[in-house]
Amino acid sequence: GILSNFAQAHPDQAKPLNEANLQLQAVAVIHGLQDEKAKGPVELGGLIQAVKANNEGIWQTKIELEVSKNWRKVNIKNNESVPIALIINELITNATKYQTEENSVQIKLDLEYSGIDNQVNKNDKVIVAISNRGEFTDQPENSLSAMSAQFGLGLVDSLMPKNGASKDCITVNGRVCVTLSFWYPVVTLM
Image (cartoon, rainbow, N blue to C red):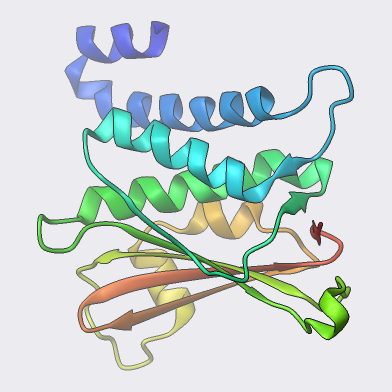
């Protein structure tokens, strides 16, 4: 509330203040999802739903969410829950800034797992893809680092877990898609 009021009183500072406010709200979402007594793990699907709803309210827009039929409950390691919440929030916020009526923000949740006897395996991988209409200018190298720089993904890069996670950026028919992959020990399937 304080940041919002200050942003209204100082329009020249509104953009960075509103972005800071969004990041604080993402952290608040995490703490609201954690069990207050046990401080148990945060479930990734619930986190994404909460951050999605928060952004829909702030930006007054609809964000599409597609969950694969093989999706399972996925818990985030406690010390990775806040960084992952900030990453998801940053990607959804960036995507929302560039959306148009014809090209809304889309989030897809998928799971790559062995499925042997329906057992969970440490090599299972959780996929979170966030896409929107982008204005990426093809550069000769069209590299991930060039895309990261153009779309302000520095915060995402700095928060990514060092082990058990990766990020890919691609453009398809004018849509920018950032795909996050998480695996053990960052996430565990239930």
